Length: 152
Image (cartoon, rainbow, N blue to C red; front, side):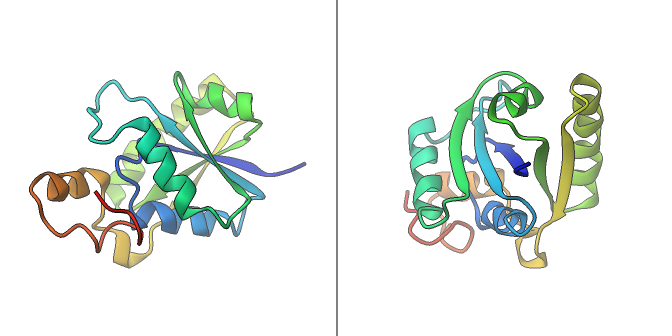
């Protein structure tokens, strides 16, 4: 059986930290579906189409990475794409506490999906899409935080 992981997020924008987690995940999984979800709590800076285009560009040479958009519960979408794993990156103990609660709820909803946590490389622990959006909005130099070739 092919090991497929779903890496959900808003990716608004995608950061070097996200890429780090995908690259680590590819050492474990046969395929990773980067799934851009809609989050009612977030106002996106970039369109869904732009975010999908950037991610496809970054992973253009990696056939084991797919980019998709979805709505609804992440665990339900896992079943739609045949993923038995949800991939999540952790930067801090606070991330773990938050992600653990979601993982437990997901397990209650769908038993055949496991959440796998990977630690961010130390260099990327200070990077979040929220911080990068603030830098972009305030016309700061964001280039250290996003993959090469991503220009706003």
